[in-house]
Length: 563
Image (tube, rainbow, N blue to C red; front, top):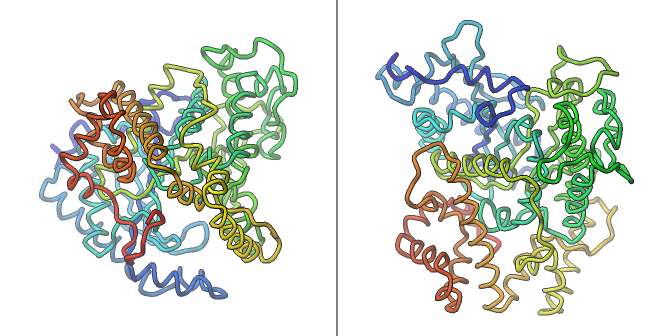
């Protein structure tokens, strides 16, 4: 047992919690793997439309028994394999607790000791979410994901146990979101650059890491949304969020959620166009914190998912929560003393600073994060880890190349922000039908308050794709695949693990099969572009292997939206 734990970096669990430690070596990650089965999904579908049905689902005896069984099985399996010296059993001991989450829903909590006196335990929480069972595991030191022993721990316990009990990962039911420590992204211009890069690569939220859905809506989903993100990024580089422009931010700014509006006429010289905010650590932090809060209110909040459901009785879709339905989410960019965005509880109440004190990095809420919501479920721990590390390594690569620019026009715009115009031009009858259906859906979702025929961008996405000509689909496929290959190569260049001869092999299956199909018809591109020809050839050579890595759509047998 001692041999398996020898050299495991337990200290990183303490170090990653220190807000002043902003390097990627000291970053932490929160992960939310999800699992479900047909019985759980059908229970939700049957109960949730009824009055009080959602509450009844969370109290269902079968679901709670399954919840407890996963917790007990994970604990017992870990103890047995630890005693046999399994390499994945890096923690000395584990205890199982039953508690309740902030919404008073029962969950199980596995507490793994790290063997250090006074040191923090490592917690694995397992609970219920609509339609699914969901882990909440945070903070996890980013460095642990580079250690094969921790990856084995995830595979043998976090993934294998629910699968043995009949639960599976699927695209349609639960996500596979993860979040990074906000402190890591509040250095230099990294937060602005990561947002700009995602705005410039909409394939990540639609064709690669996720499928189009309003729970993780693309930054580029509508013209209004795209313009809002572009505007706030431009304001950032103009210095409109620097304390020289808006004044020194204080604790009251965060607690009252005021003072983060961009300056109309920022002074020159506040920003280094090649590095980011000028000034000392406080000025850099305050600029990026103000920018992050402005993104939340001025960009995430523009045509977000579930916008029609803002109603006091809809806890999940309250006004403050509605903006989180986005491919990236800054709702938890908060300091100690603010209210939790879901439960309303005071954050880190013992650490609340003076009301008039200047905002400092050290005041961040201990779970302040930048969430990557556009991540669908993963079929294995290894695949989840590779998806997570791709984003972490790419962010590190970006941190060395500040000031990302965003292209105003992409081939993908025809099925995203210009999707309505595409459908109207190609099939006006279909557009008329979609508007009629949307009016009825908007009225129902809003309880009669929204009389509008606004069509969800995800509906337009697939309608526009199917209405596109083969050459237009090929152009979208070329752009999306080349953009993703570039991301993988850039991330691989800073990966501390041994370099693989084919970095795309761990990620090629993420490309939606429809893109490979569209690319196959583009003979001109395949004959002139070696990268595209190589990628298509390697996909075809191992297509069954890659398809096996992709999660199913739904254990109920429902058809996916692209069919």
